[in-house]
Image (cartoon, rainbow, N blue to C red):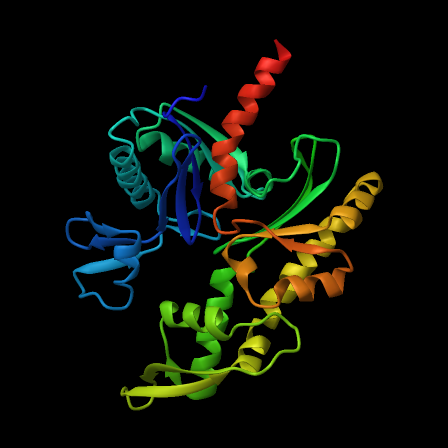
Length: 335
């Protein structure tokens, strides 16, 4: 039986999730911290810090310590992980002491980036840290048969990166990582609104636009929404009306980059496994997988069935937690 001190962490650019086999999902918080610029102490993290984006005085800076799936600010990431571990421990009745942790890394991460993630988790109080490739964790969390001699293709569209992986016999056979994901889509919306309307908006507004009227490249009934920003010329608040067809074009570049990563991964897939993908299709996970029309569009262009994972936002975290169980069963079977 697995101990409560075994936990899985999905340390993502957009969100950090903590999962245990016994308790399920313990923590799901945005990977955002608010730091006092004078003392360098964290004054808020997670949802509380995310609400502060664009609204803080000069004495407080809101930071996203991960960029493109890897650590951009090591010290802040370590502090954030300590706070998350403390919160997880409280939820488990202080049963979480010196846990063994499995944490995910992008399949394209360098050895230096992997070591940085490992060191940050260890310094946050972990007894032992094991790294796991994100596509494998996402596939396990999505319920795919990763340990069988059958190809499972996963496309994990996160905040900083999109991970494309073909998995068979518990390992990655072919993979690709691109920096076209949720954050890039938000940046494209911000740049478009500034260029087209001379209005500045923040990341939270851009994310809301994407979630409300964002569509993949499929025909749809046009939707309209109003947003508020700051006029570049006058400096005064201004209301802008946006349509879903405008935003669809704004997202085109990011979507085509994701498509190219999928095609490139399929091209290097061994021919024996290609037939499995045609039969079983591609599974989408991550927050970006929730973009309207994405399954329909991808299925039409790659001519392979495309499905959404049961819990797309939590697949990686669930996979890290379940991987302990899979590893334990494997060891028992080998005895």
